Structures are given as C-alpha cells and as structure tokens.
Length: 359
Image (cartoon, rainbow, N blue to C red; front, side, top):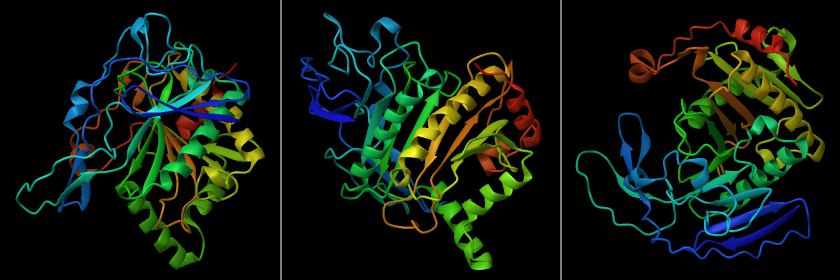
C-alpha cells in the first residue's frame, strides 16, 4: 500500500491510499476556501455525566447536492472538489465541518453546574471509492482491504494525537439515516473523551470478568456461535450474528474469532477475510426488502488509554427500517428513557437475512 499526504487549500490534511506504488498524487487544490472554523465547545451534563459538543458551524455544511456538484468525486477541469486528483482509490481528509478539531476557539462560562472546555480532537472523511453511484456492498475484496488499511492507519495516527481518548470509524448510509452526501463514504471521529456507550459496555465487561474470569465480548461470540440460530454468515475468521437482545429491527454484529483491541491487531488473513463476509451481509440487507437498506456501521475499538484489556474490536451494523414501507422512530420510550422496544424478533431477522439470495 502507498500512502500519500497532501494539503487542501485551507490547510487541512488529505491522505491518498493506493495499491499502486506509481500512483501520481501531485495535483494541487487551488480553490479559494474560507478560513477553517474554530473548534466546537464541549459542555458537561452533570445529570448523565456526558460531554455534549456545541458545533454551530455545522449548520452550514453541504446538504445533499446533486451528483454534478458532489464534493467527494474526483476533480475535473472547471469543477474542483475536496479531492484534487482526477481519480483515486481511497481518500481520507479532514472534515471541513468538524464536530471536533485542533483549531483554537474562545470559550466562556455558561453558568449552572456545566463545565466548558474546547472540543479538541479531529474528524475525518473516508471516501471508499471514486464511483459516485456505488456502495460499500459493491466494493471488491481488494478495495475493502484498502479501506481497512486506511482505517488502521488513521486509528493509529489519531490515537497518538495529544488529548485523543478514543477513535471511532463509522459509516452512515441512506437519507433515512440523515446523510448529507450520497457518495459512498464514512467518517472517523477522534474524541477527547471515552464515549458513553464504551463506558457502559466496559462496566458490564469488568463485572463479567469479576464474576467469571472471562471476556464478555468473547463469551457472547462463543455463545452465539454455539446457539447458531441467530448466526447470519461466517467464515474461517469472522462471524456475523443478530444479537439476542437486538435494539433495532435489523441489527447484525460482526466479530473476528480472535480477540484484538483494535483493527490494527488483525493479522493479514483476518483483514482479507472481513471484506467478503461484510459485503455479503450488506447485500443481504439490501435484498431483505428489495431496496437499498439505510444503515449505520460502527466499529467498536479500544480507547487509547483505558480498558484495552477488556476491549474486543467488532462492528455493529443496524438499520431503522422495520418493513419495506416502515421505519422505526425513536419515540417516547427510546428517546426519553433509553428503553428500547423492538418490533421484530432477532431470530426472525436472522432467518430472513439467511434466506436472502445474494449475487
């Protein structure tokens, strides 16, 4: 793999990831861009012990432009984009409208019991392919491997940045999810704190270890593989299953068979085996209702400084679509109380996904 670093017109970093060593990445971004926005403001919620980012500049971010104005496509004469090159394989660059950044900002007191501090960190965009009308499900195994190499590279580099506590790689897909750009892409957040979900699951993992001496994530995987009824697909190195207590009508977790704290711990054979299984699962999602499935794909990796002995890198993939013409909305119970009610039995979801015929 060849990695090439360059800078956009406003100083943001951009990384090309190529399989070819002779890839020419000398194109220069000659746009006249406005100054980069200041870092967001973090405010502490004493009732939930969570940090909330206030990022007003994101209100002005690009929203569902036509394909002819897509900022993630390669640049062409007369229409420069976020990617200066006329073609690319995989590209990662700093988000122009970040939730967290290293830019300076001014922060005052807000009163009450809330603390305030800068939203230091970093947000990056990952372009999975230069093909605007493609999707992750249609990527070749080799292209998925290149995307994974980009995830691994960025996780390692962002984890080494001062103040970063956790790195999160994810993809939002579909207008129903709230995407602002339709080009196949994901994002990477480098948080200045350990996220609430990770703190919650690590607390459960710590208590499980005290009771049993085992790793909670590994034991969940082993139990699902033994039960089999919720397994959707598997290969030598990975298993995809619907969790027994799924919150979402369509929810699949993908685990490597060997516990590693983050993606960088995966061996070459494990990295290569991920793509064929994952894209198969994505095609099953699209085939479930014979339409593109909106989804969120979320990589859970160990935080930088805590819990690495508890962590087990894995992906959560879920959708809010519960039927061909119905979405699951997070209404009163879920939104106000965090108490989920799932309309679809996990065993039924697994059976339906197994029955989908994929290409």
